[in-house]
Image 1 (tube, one colour):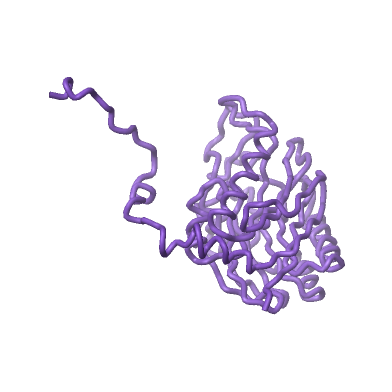
Image 2: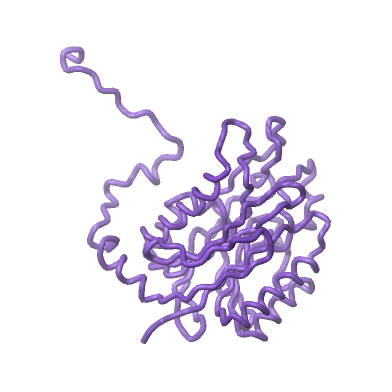
Length: 323
C-alpha cells in the first residue's frame, strides 16, 4: 500500500510588532482554509508564527516581554487555529514562544492532530545570537536572552496522519544548520521533518561580509543535505518580507529524500506551497548508502559528542627534528 501525504508549507509574510495575536491567527486560519482547498493533509507554519521576531528587541527586564509568550495551547486567542484543523481534518505544525507554568521560556514547536491533540512537542536546541545587548550589531539577536536551550532533545514520534502512521520529527531555524540535529532523528527512522524559521536576509553580526544570495543558498543546502543523508522529507517554512523594518528572506521549501526541492515559495508574503510525498521514497536511502546498521562506525565519532569547541590538530614535524 502506498503511503502518501499532501504536504504544505504555509509561509507567513511579516508580522509587525504592533500586530496583535488576532492578526496572526486570522492569517493562519485563512492559510488553513486554502490548504484544505488544495488538498493538504499536513500544514507547517513558521517559527514564532504568532508574533514578530521579538528577540531583535532588547528588554532589560525579561518580564516586560511576557506578552510575547504562550502559557497554554490552545488559548482563547489561538483556539481558531485548532477549530480550523478540526473543521478541515488537517494536522499542523506551529512555532511559538512558550512560557511554562514554572517560568521557563522556550522557542517551541508543536505538531497537532486534526482533533486538536498535541502529538509531539519540540524546544529549540541550537540557540544563535547572544544574551546581552551588543553595541556592535546593527540589529540585536537575543534568543539566548529570551529562551533557554531546549530540554526535549530531538524526539521522533510515529503518529497517525491522514490514515497513515508516519515517523515525524521537528527542528527550529538554526537547528537545520547542524548535521547532528538531522542525524539524531535519522537514527530514529524519521520520515518527515518539520521546521520553521525566521531568517534575516542580511547577516547582522557585522563581523564580515556575507553575500545576500548565500543566505538562501546556505539554508537550502543544509535542508537538502539533511534530507538526503537521512532519507527523509522536510517541510521548511519561513517568515518573509520586511518585519519591523528588517527583511526576512522567505524561500520556504519542501524537499524529498533525494535532496530535491519539490516546491518553493516565490513571494514575500503569505503563501501556501504543496507537494505530494510518497513516504516509500525514504526506503531507498536507508536501505542502501545510508543503511546505518551496516555502515555507521560510532567508535570513530567520539569527538562529536565529547567535545564542544574546536581544537587545533597535531603538528607534523620532520623525523630528524623529532629525534
